[in-house]
Length: 151
Ligand SMILES: Cc1cc2nc3c(=O)[nH]c(=O)nc-3n(C[C@H](O)[C@H](O)[C@H](O)COP(=O)(O)O)c2cc1C
Image 1 (cartoon, rainbow, N blue to C red):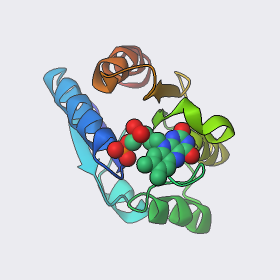
Image 2 (image 1 turned 90 degrees about the vertical axis):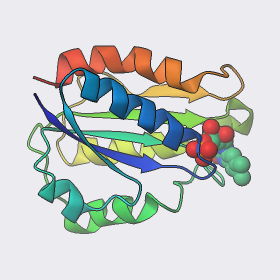
Image 3 (image 1 turned 120 degrees about the vertical axis):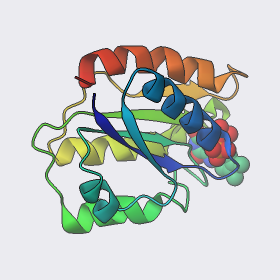
C-alpha cells in the first residue's frame, strides 16, 4: 500500500473530475490518496506520501490554473528535494492552442525533475479536441504508472 499526494489544477472542473476517477481507481487498488485542490508543499510533506501525482489543465496561454499556481511557486521558493521519489503528471489541454498545448503539465513536470523526482512513466497529454472521455485516457495511463511507481 502506498500513499499518493494528488495535486489538482482545474478551472472548469474537467481535471477535477479526472482526479476523482484516478483517486477511486487507486483506492480500489488498495492505496491511500490525498486529493488536494489547493495543493501546498506543507500539505504534500505532511501527507507522508510515497509518490506525487499532478493532474492539471492549462489555462490562459500555457498557464497553470489559479488553484495550483501557488503550489508551483512554493516548489520554486522552498525547493523540497524529492530524492528520487516517484511522480507523475496528467496534463489536460486543447491542441487548438498550438504551442501552449498542455503547457501547465509541462511546467509541473519540469519542476519535479529539477527537484530530483523520478518519472517512471512520461507525462500523458489529454487533448480536448481528440477525446470526450478524458478520464478513460487518464485511467489507462494510471495502470502503467501504478505498476511502475507504487509498491
Ligand atoms: C481561457 C482558456 C484558455 C486555455 N488555454 C489553453 C492553453 O494555453 N493550452 C492548452 O493546451 N489548453 C488550453 N485550454 C484548454 C483547457 O486546458 C482544456 O479545455 C481542459 O480540458 C480544461 O480543463 P479544466 O476544466 O479542468 O480547467 C484553455 C481553455 C480556456 C477556457
